[in-house]
Amino acid sequence: MYAISKATHNKASAMGYLVRPSTRKGKKMDVFDKKTGKKVASIGQKGAMDYHMYVKSKTHGESYARERRRLYLIRHKHNNKMSGRLAKALLW
Image 1 (cartoon, rainbow, N blue to C red):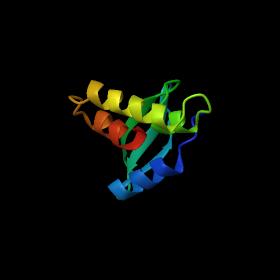
Image 2 (tube, helix red, strand yellow):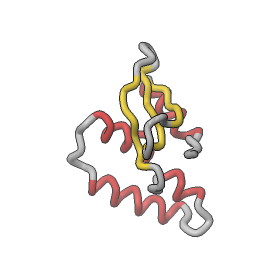
Image 3 (cartoon, rainbow, N blue to C red):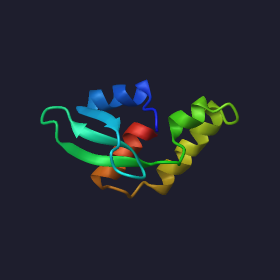
Image 4 (tube, rainbow, N blue to C red):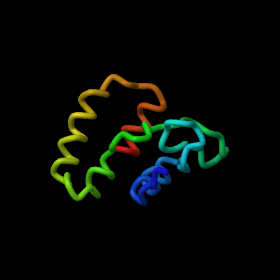
């Protein structure tokens, strides 16, 4: 199971969302609208690393995580779907 970081919870809350572990196979977390409680999207590929995982990793560290973030943002700069925007904001 994917452990949602405190930073991700804080970012989501500031944006008006709640995050919970995903009920959808292959996804890391489900994002819900804080006001309505309705599910907005399922984000993050389970098994893939994200910024917070790279930072915590003993073999990679923060400088490597920043480089991975930079490359991720370049790769996904044209992804304007709701799930893509949320993934960029919450996981990277």
